[in-house]
Amino acid sequence: MSPELYILADPALTNKHPAWTAAAIVCYLALMLFIGYRAYRSTGNIDDYMLGGRRLPPAVAALSAGAADMSGWLLMGLPGALYASGLVEAWIAIGLTVGAWFNWKLVAPRLRSYTEIAGNALTIPSFLGNRTRDKSGALRIASGIIILVYFTFYVCSGMVAAGTFTESAFHLNPVWGIVIVGGVTLLYTLFGGFLGATWTDVAQGLLMLAALITVPIMALIQLGGPGAVGQTIADLDAIDGLHRLNLFGGPLTWAGLVAIISAAAWGLGYFGQPHIIVRFMALRSPAEAKAGRRIGIGWMILSAAGAIGAGLIGIAYFADAPLGGRKEQVFLLLAQALFHPLVAGLVLAAVLAAVMSTMSSQLVVCSSALVVDLLSLAKSGRYKLSKQQEVLAGRLAVLVVAVIAFVLSLTAQDTILKLVAFAWAGFGASFGPVIILSLYWRRLTNWGALAGMVTGAVTVFIWGNIPVLTENLYEILPGFVLNLVVALIVSALTAKPSSAVTDEFESARQAALARVAPPGAGAGAGAAKTYQAD
Image (tube, rainbow, N blue to C red; front, side):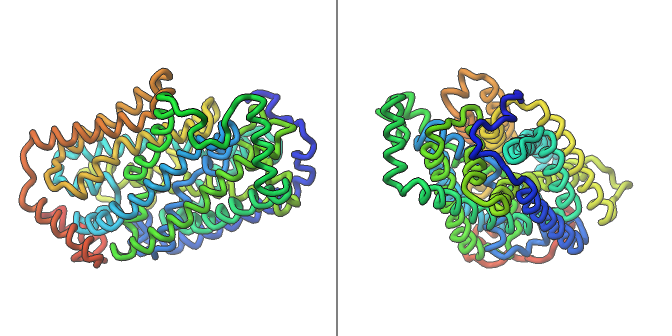
């Protein structure tokens, strides 16, 4: 990053009492480590480490899913986009909210019942392999590789956000933020596993919500209310010809419509995000998906509204001192300008909460992809791992992915939002259509799922790296559609699933509709062993 970014020109934005801010953040980090330690004490086997023993209450699942979803982009990327372009960027939040509702409604109950019926699957790759009776192992291998590739970019975006945070709050080299925040996240995830990530997510989700409500309200009061803010923005629009308060960004053109569709298409990504839908698998029963949906969507609406408000209010607040290249720091700078350093430290800790909650969830999923899916397929019968060795292997996998993401983050040039957008599209286009088909279409075959998944992943990777394409249409749309079409065609051209697959499909469907625990619920690892033997 350029040296100019280490200087804040406006004295009002300078953190004059960094010791207070640092004290608040240190207390927050210590609390996260303590929660991770408590989770470590409750982790006895790979089932606990990867899925928390399927015993999450709906409120915990909802808050942890929300916190795992809304990474640093919610408090940095989204407000920065609103600050730069105005209300037209809110289509991302609108699309995400709608997508999240459908995800809880359509995917959560069926995935919860089906994953336990299908051999007590602990991961998305193992579920897809069990669901389609993929004897070749190709589906699980491809799924695991996709998870590792795209989550490496996703974790990298979190570390970049941590570096941006440190730069803004303490005017330090971003590397310090990457090392400290990444290190603490790695520690509590390394030892606490899924439970550590989940319970820290709950605390972090509540902290994020409090900050996203408090900051824009306080700024609004200081500026004189909505009318004064709206007038200031209107005056700026008159000068530069923008339409910041227009949801369509001005007169609607074909290019503008495509941009809105691209932004709203973020909602499609929800169906394929492993670190989010794994929370559905960990619910105590399918019946609790309904309560989880209400809590999760309520949290999301309030949080998204706060982020949108912060971005728009920031336009008026910094009208006399534009932020220039620091647009993604608008939320951080508002907090520093409005509050006592100790309170500002707690607000800034919410930014760390957003970053760390997502990174920890992603690291656990990466670990499961390596250990439960790739390693279990690679090891022969004469090299069985004990329960303790499996957990150790999971922790080593977390460490490996974190180190790779750390190295990439040191040279990352893209904004936080762009890094997140690429990874989000990768998962949404790779897994989304296949997950939906696996839950609602009994005719899906292993070759159809594999062909669709690979098509979606490759399409996003190619499309997302060609500027002329990605600047005009978000890569998740072509990837999602091509995945769906290819999966349908290939499944129709390959052999029909066996009666065992269709019977299992019907059992999972009935269990989800009845909102009761599926047969064998709570059987844990034993269910998986019986399934594999069959």
